[in-house]
Amino acid sequence: MQKLDEKQAERLKELRSRIDHIDRDLVALLQERLSVAEKIGKTKAKSLAQPLDTVREKEVIDHILEYNRGIFPPEGLQVIFSEIISACRNAQRPARVGYLGPETTFTHMAAAEFFGHAPDFIPEGNITEVFEEVERKRIDFGVVPVENSVEGTVALTLDGLCDYKIKVCGELYMPISHDLISKSGRLDRIRRILSHPHALAQCRLWLQRNLPAVPTEEVVSTAQAARWAAVDESVAAIASPLAARTYKLYTVARRIEDFAGNTTRFLILGHECPRPSGRDKTSLLLSLEDRPGSLFRLLEPLAGKGINLTKIQSRPVKDEPWRYLFYVDIAGHIEDEHVKEGVESIRGGCTFLKWLGSYPMGEMKH
Image 1: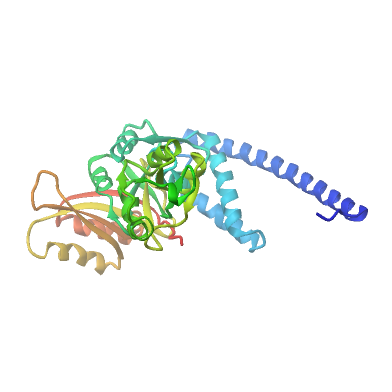
Image 2 (image 1 turned 30 degrees about the horizontal axis):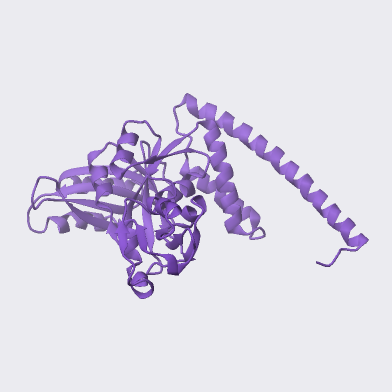
């Protein structure tokens, strides 16, 4: 490396000193922001309001990106302020967030992306446990997968939405990328491949092309597969980059999923829905009378009020053969007049109708 001359070295020293001063100013401003956030928390506590306000937090991020005018890398700025907001929110009232565990699963990653890293994250053994813990208020929020663009709907989540008294208060779309990881990082040493059934299915073609003679084995999670790989050099796991870092494994091959654009939608479970943001989604669960044209008669009033139906998914009713529940997503918030009227207009044609929640639409990422 070429040595700096005296003038360059002095200039570098000045610039680094300036950086140090800026960092001290940033810390002072962050401390001031935290103090104000704590006062907001005390004010909210008097009205029993939740510290989480997704609409306000989105407004803050949008304003920051507007102030920035693209000078600081926008994605980095968004990550920085998301974590600042998370820390300040947690100072108002520490949050307990349950998720489909164990650690390093994609649901864990989704929970951290939605809430930031400040809350207390609690892994649950299965989806039903997440619903149960939220309903009993042993945790403040839960995070569960509801559908994948390749594998389809997660049936246990639909069942939980029916069986438990909770509200959907948010959603998150996360691109799913699978890596093949192992203790050695070498393809020729792999004798078994472990992963969750969905991950194995999403990488089937790659495995057939590159490791056709190596047997695969299903385990309960990608994280469990990574833990196996950490103690057995002959085992490789299909898991997330976070799992590789956590369990100190090497990457054998990156992004081995068969289809680009593989995305999972996650739901945020809680007890209170956020106020309207102007770009919202309302989720319903309903059952129809068993007669010809009942589904059409359901959808017709919604169309008449200009309500966009974004998703409809059928699910067999437990213990009642040939009867179905329908999970329905519509654009808009339940407090929007046309949405409220639309939901009321279909109530008479339903044998069962449950408002699951209204929340800001998640943004699709690529």
